[in-house]
Length: 114
Length: 109
Image (cartoon, rainbow over all chains, first blue to last red; front, side):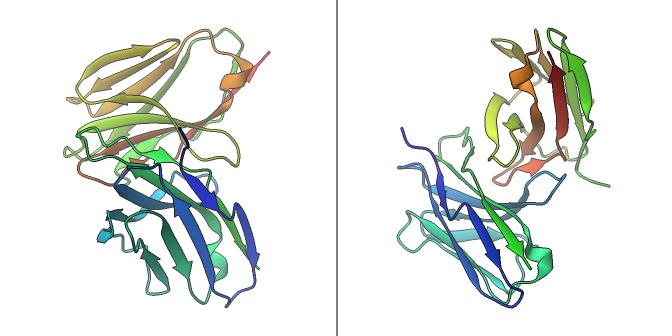
């Protein structure tokens, strides 16, 4: 039973560059979520997909952020023109649609913007 | 005011102690309550999931929910150094989880 995987695990970039992260959910989980976590805080919701449809976006997700899940399997989160304030851990989670909808998290991608 | 309040700690206890962690919340729409454990630089790991008010036990862990007071707790019995981590409460009404800030727990041998 493979869990949620994320790639890369770490990313260092310079301000103004674009970065893309990938998330592979648990197989047969049709809901996929992105969260952002900064130091000393709990994760904050960014967006979620049911299959390939993006159903909700947080106001935290500025125009520089875009997420896709083109075939209802893996998802990508892209940040354009990165800013130092984007430095955080980006977490992906997945769940079944089964009433409980327990969310299982991946290991996260740690982004540092210099 | 945050929807979910959680004391960030750190909470330091000796090995074998009973640990009590708690969260309060303000949104009556929250129906599902979870506790996640997060080790440094790792993703959150689900520990407990509860739906209704009352207690749920799993090994050394007991989760308690009091919807009337909007208060949830996690108790850890016979705490071990390996329990040292950040404990995050999380809750949801519909889809997204809303987390507390996390309480950092340190269990000393």
